Image 1 (tube, rainbow, N blue to C red):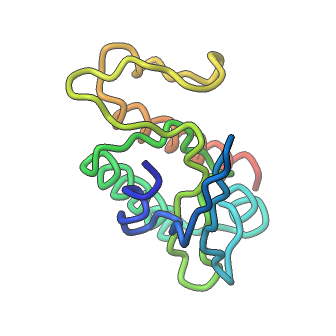
Image 2 (cartoon, rainbow, N blue to C red):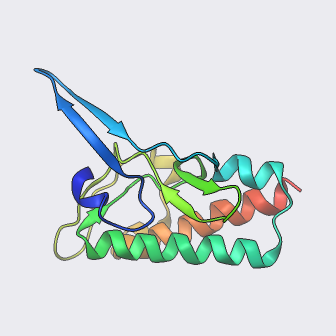
Length: 144
């Protein structure tokens, strides 16, 4: 699944992997000028244009992942890296990820208290975008 996700622009790249008898060792790219979205938002004063650019990238990357048949299932500020110069983002941490089934997605991964009400009976993309938007907007406004 991570091999397929690595082909999506904006997703952290899988450089190599080693298969062990009971596990895998993943070798991932390491961006040079990056911090997670939470730190980026709390340490800098994001202007409206920058926030709009970040959200646009999150939505586009979520759609691209779904078009590739992949659901991240843990999109949050700590799993998004921001390039400190270009403000381009990358999704990381696909440990909860899975392949997107045909039809309505109804599998939940994570803590129940964080589930968005839109998960019930709708495509995950709607929930993912709404959840990330709400979480980032809250962090960006409350932390100022």
